[in-house]
Length: 591
Image 1 (cartoon, rainbow, N blue to C red):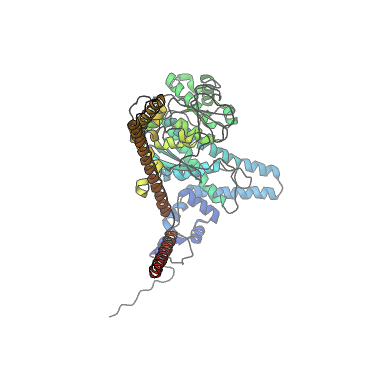
Image 2: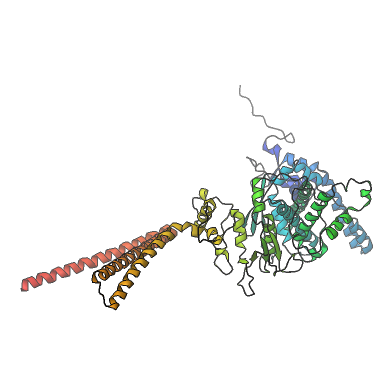
């Protein structure tokens, strides 16, 4: 008996992909919201479209998992969004009736919402938040550099992004957690290690940003809203881990001079000193009556002078509650130790104010609010990016900004000879690429590795700068050989001139002079032959290098051209040989 196929009646429960996935329009209809609000809820909750194996409604639809939609449906944030939407209708109604007083009152009482529960749901542990911080930092640093536009970006949001980005940079610089820096066309890449997690973010160059019309800023602002809340929670947790109160209160004078990083460093210093000198202030009975913000502002105003020279990143060590420093942190902390930097106006001040103190250096700049001036005799390096047109100070090295970044990536102080002002810079190598895995190791990377691995002993008549130069150390054996050859040549020349003097006095030691002449001429001939051989080898190596750099098609054309020339040359030689033989045969016949 053949079983009849079972057909599911209409209206019954669905099965398979039809029951597990719904289209975007179905999800919007189920949640009873509009499309922009649905997108915002998905961004805040971290819900993304799915790709089912079998698309029931067709390939031109966007599908969401039914559990994700029900997850949004039970979110308390959805009710708040609906209330805000209804409240906006009241404001529009008051404006339509030209009741401006009521409209202004309604705007002031507009309901708000917080994303605390959403962040706690998405990141139950602090390590989870650190793992997802790369895009957050990149977005916040991007909006911190954008201009404020009335219809698109609010100025308060720009200031908030700038403040939080400086708070993050100040913590990384304070704890010496920065590991890698790379300057690219897109911007500057940074990598830090916090709680064992590597965090990489991108900051734009300090140039005028132009906003285009092909970017949907509404979606980006939805992401930014979540990232602002996430970064605020992360900064608060990190600041409390080193016993620093959050949010920090900065010196308004330094904020007016756009020196927020320096102001944050002073705040770190004040907080650290107060916690070390008087750790029991908070436990006193009457301490709760004093306003907390006034206490912190008093610390900033009285514990630090208004323009203390060594206050920039002069952070107190062994702060209670700070984690034990690992080997990488200790190495980064000692890299620029006992070095004092001064930044010219043309360099990227914010980047260098972040990088140099993160590796133990002291830095100042040309402008208002600087901790020390340009004529300070204790300055060891001055960062310039233009040809020098002013007075040079004795005992100071004028280097380009790339020297700082290359020293950071190499974790060693590189020689400044190739980075001096006005010189052509060596290649800026990316620390995020492993040359051995790529199969190509640049020459400058080999030079840095050889210098890092070499153990240089002090030699007589050799200065400290010569020992720091890897090129001098690599060519030490060649220099010894050249010195020996020069010594021999000078001895032969001296013998020759002595013979000339004897000849002028009347005595003619012909055998000695002829012997000396023969030796010098033989030496000159030998040197000439060696130099000719070297030039031929250099030309040959250059030709081979050029062949390696061109494409395969062009290389084939070049080889074909060489064969054609050689064939023509051989044909010409054959024709000449035939003509010579004909002439010889004719002469033999005539004779």
